[in-house]
Length: 286
Image 1 (cartoon, rainbow, N blue to C red):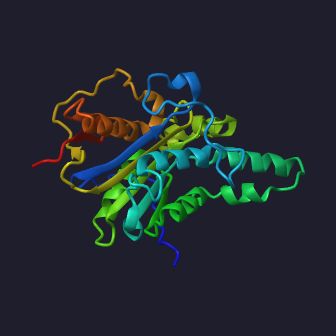
Image 2: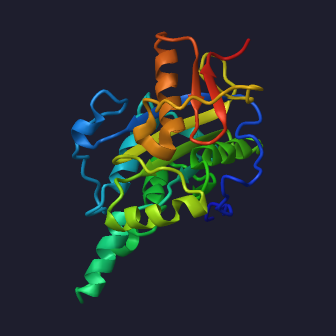
Image 3: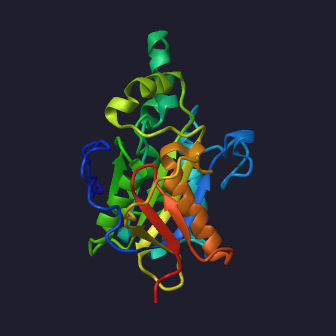
């Protein structure tokens, strides 16, 4: 049976949305990848520019980036580190991306205009969720798959969707993936001309992917919770360290905070999304 896929209508920053998390959620796994060379120095997830080859995917780094960050988050399938195990049927996935695999789309378009033969591989991977099919087969995940692309605060929308899924009895955990590859000429042109009108958030400075495995509150795991806005609180104008990640900043900050809390380096951390939502990562409440 094909997993059910939800389709959410794109929202703008002015739309009234429910809070991103109705209750605290445990962070069972977290990873981020920022492989754009020297620009990633000092940032969490910094890696070599080249990613491991992924059989069946060519040209673009979109799918290899997703594959790499998910494997880092979930652990290798069938190993003691595998966080899916026998929970495959009760694991859902939320993939959030503003523009998707623009490299594949642009390459296919350029070949078509040039009168070249279309590559079957480009046709296959032009579907944003094709990499999810590869990953679900590796991990035995048969839960719901959701792909989001929206204006406004896309990171908060991804967490909001995961929160809704975790309220379902047949869902035990949700893998949240945020990914954007370095914007090319077309994506940059479109974004510059539509961002303000459509409520689109900033793009990252380069290839970025984040994976968070969220569960219901679990003792011993870091916890992500929504923090209500403080009355009279004045927003700071200083650029945060996570600004280069664009709309992904809240997911990157969450991944880093979870790792630091698990390692005992901090007790809690405040996460700011690019919209009005704020979150706190800390130990599980007693």
